[in-house]
Image (cartoon, rainbow over all chains, first blue to last red; front, side, top):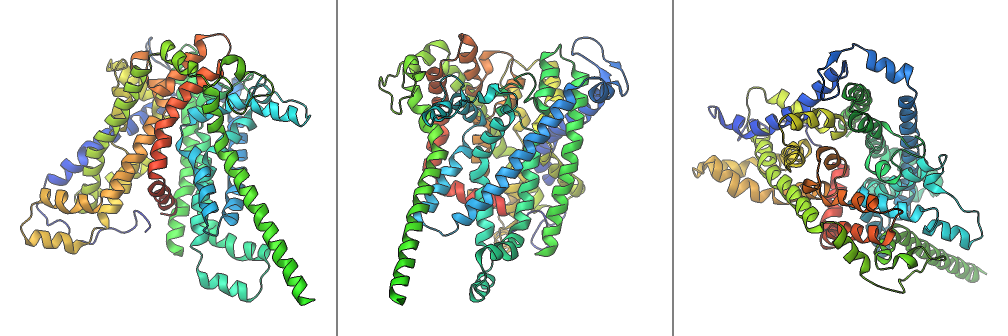
Amino acid sequence: MRPGRKLPRPSGRKSSGTGLVPYLLVGPAMLLLLIFVFYPLVNLVYLSFFDYNLIREKTFVGLKNYEVLFFVKTDFLDALRNTAVYTLSVLFFSLLLAVLFALWLEPDSRINRFLQKSMFTPYLISMVSCAYIWSWMYDADSGILNAMLALFGLPLSRWLNDSDLALFCVAAVAVWKSLGYYLIIVLASIRSIPAEILEAAALDNTPPVRKFFRITLPMISPQLFFLLITITISSFKVFDVVRVMTDGGPGNATDVLVTYIYRYAFQMNARVGYASAAGTVLLVILMILTYFYFQVLSKRVHYQ
Amino acid sequence: MNLTSSRSVRLRRRAMGLLSLLFKLAMAVFFLFPFYWMITTAFKTYGESIRFPPTLWPESFTPEAFSDVWQRIDIPRYLKNSLLVSLGVVTLQAVFNVTAAYGFARYEFRGKRWMWALVMLAFMIPTQITFVPVYILFSKAKLLGTLWPQILPFAANAYGIFLIRQSFLQVPDELVEAARMDHAGELKILTHIMLPMCRSSIITAELFSFISTWNSYFWPLVMTNSDKVRPLTLAMQRLQDAHQGLEWPVLMAANSLLVLPVLLLFLLLSRQLLSSFGYRGIK
């Protein structure tokens, strides 16, 4: 059931001479994609070489925007670093927890299905709502997390107001929200391991840890790699949760690439050219990740 | 000897089972508690919400926060915008995604290969990349004061085309052949064979679109310049800057209104949603 591989067999498909029909079918969607995806894409790169603020005429400045991004200002590198730290923490905890939970919930029972469903619920709720709820729970004065710390006599934390901790608090919400979805994927791939292999392992009395590293992990590694790339891509474009919970603060401790672009394009005197340069950097990063994504997809097809 | 050890093994196993069960319940609580906390906070008075230690169940249990929300912001208008935008996107996608998917699945034509390559490429380009130029586009077209900037860019979506094309490809050729033998026209083949056969995957694609549009925050934040056209997700920040300090019961009341429709949808359709998400993951 792998998508996009199998070209339709010619038999039974279109007889020739349909002329315009396929173009009428495909045309509108293609036009929309051209206007709202590809033209903006080209325009973004184009604008990144200009000084432009939506009102005055644009002036060509060559690579100056990029020079400012990387060598003059430091806030872009901060945003880049924050995004990387955020991505790594989300990746690490999402994958680890998804695998652990999947092993734990592998037998199909009522309680397991219930837990799986509970874990999936936050995935459907908007990030904005989740972010507001967690902001309230993280609240330094009357949030429930500090109340619980106090209950156990532990020192209180300032959570989102603590510049060392804030980014991880935000990452935790992202993990909490999507873990249920990753769990479903890992669970499905564990359950699709052929029964013969598992029976053989059971006959040999393979200890569970060894069974995991020798059988389960290699068998689910394609799905894990798929998740790795998907999570990395979605973490690099994180915006909603950061914007609602910290808006990049305190200071710029949680400023990430997209909040950075947004701020320069819409808040700081609309420095559109400069923001476009930052956007182009994000584009390059995403393109590299996408390249790996397709590499993996094509490899999986050969193996199966 | 043997008997007692097997009994102790069984006992230990049962204890482990019980422990595991308790831990599972605790995890379920961890994942659902935030929603409980949202709803119970919404029914507290401001005074009770900041009390220490917090009350697990609202003592006051008052809908005050909800009426506060109602008075401070124009909920029906935000709700109307959210609904119009979500339904608009879903309706247009039902037309453009389905026709494009049908064209790609059932026809051979010049340029098909590179057009399909463009669709796949579009699939990988997020709105976080395109938003600045699209904003400029709509601002030049003087459409920023309308709902169109939130609808039009999503009228066709690469993921939906991809998903629906897959299911069109799976309709057996024999069925189409047979229909052709009976002199059924192309339109009749589409409406009488293809669409009914692919109903569930089209509905799934539409459902995803609805939920993701309903939940969207980034795009409307960028593309709107007045409350007249803002959706519910952006209403929350009105409540935030309206007052000094944060009145959590009010914020949570508004949040409950935002969460409830999706939560209900999930309760109704959880089985289908879970299995289709699983399918999407495995592919």
